[in-house]
Length: 107
Image (cartoon, rainbow, N blue to C red):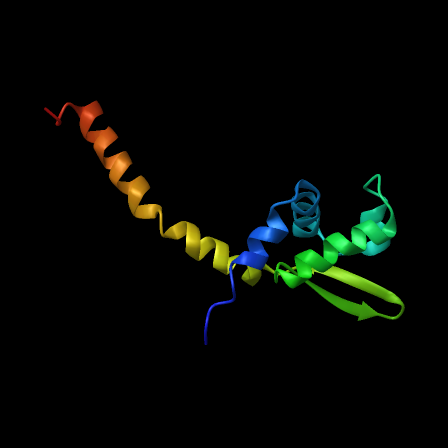
């Protein structure tokens, strides 16, 4: 199985409103109406943000009667986490050098 493309995830997270929506959905599932109540924008604008988040794989949407319930999809963050983990070695090396310098092990 191939990894999901990373570009839609970054596009979804690029906008501060969408990051706010992700944080809200991390706390609890919400309908479009509940999210709209928390922003100074139209329902259509919130729906567009939710579509981008869904396209990025960061949220899932399920129908309950007439409501569409939006939920965080933690697995959707895997492409971002995998990409960022590529840089772990960079930080590990830098922190090891800093530790050596602090401990006086470096000339």
